[in-house]
Length: 84
Image 1 (cartoon, rainbow, N blue to C red):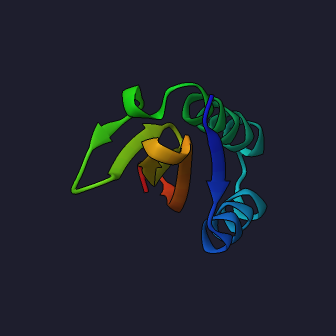
Image 2 (cartoon, rainbow, N blue to C red):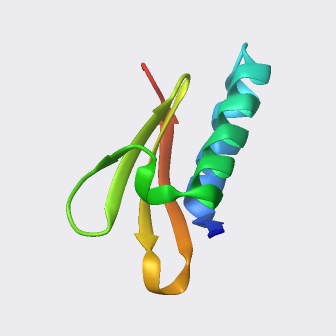
């Protein structure tokens, strides 16, 4: 299992997305799915980008995150509505 950490700016962005959403249940479900996938096996979630960074899409959200294998940690540092 990996520890999932959200950067404060990503937490704020998620809160803003949720507050402005007409589909709050879907946003909550996507955020929960992202958390669960990152905790279980972040290296098999989404697509690789440069270095430690990966991107994943769980409608209606997308996230950028880094995987630190040596620390068993995944860190979400950006989130946005997808498709926008």
